[in-house]
Length: 349
Image (cartoon, rainbow, N blue to C red; front, side, top):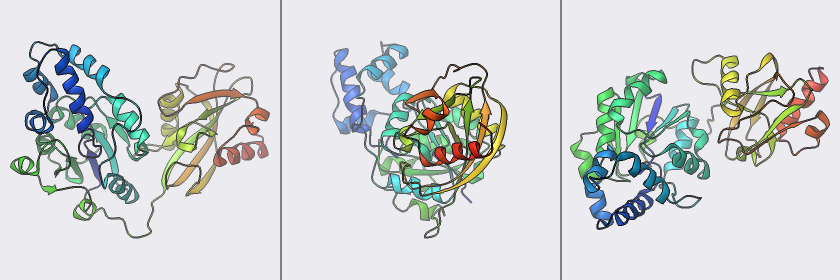
């Protein structure tokens, strides 16, 4: 049974080939090298990308190439759309309880921003990006994520993806939506080859039963500083309303460990005196960015200092240390308001 899905990004889920081609041609122009059309680029481009750029720009160092690529790649929403069927595939896999990990050679900043803009970032347990040779790194990824090869499939659009999957002993899936043709992929002998992602859930046995939506267990904490102020953060995921830091519990991870990890990742804070408060059964929250069913494990915790330094990651836009009165007057998401009210009723804050 396939329980884990490792997915390439470029050409598999996201249609970034036009943007990558434009960026490459700008780099070629910069060094006075003739540009390529789409077909020539598809015929010559390969992974690891270092080999391709060494061929077309042999006298340029890798750090210089990487910096130039980052300078010329278009930023902002709309430059990289999702491929057809990608969103439904991710949604179906997530509802069926499959673990999803992104494994891409594209820069993390680019992939993270694109996935967020396209509303798919929360499907993934991890974004593993900036990978040069996937054949080497996939073994470490499987070990780190505790994924058994016989329960894992790697889905990609290039021969390099198929070769990487084969080297790790996972089920390999080629999709003809990206950088290499179906004929080229066929030569790599993937276990499954599809023109697109439309029928792949059924082929992999991950079609969720009609109407079934497995709840996602998450942890979050209302953090209180020594002055009694509360930390609230604003995030796009909850319609830009104020809430608390937290996130998903990973497979095999205790809830308290998940809470400490999520708080460190999202705020840079370490907490103490953690107290469990409540579980909220959050079904189809209208404020959340997509259809979801969460089991919210809510805690209250203390943090040393008065208004300690908060270092937000890319998931949040803004934070505030506020009094209780200021918190209740803020545009809070519903679960956070219910948590604060429960803490008040029980004398926890």
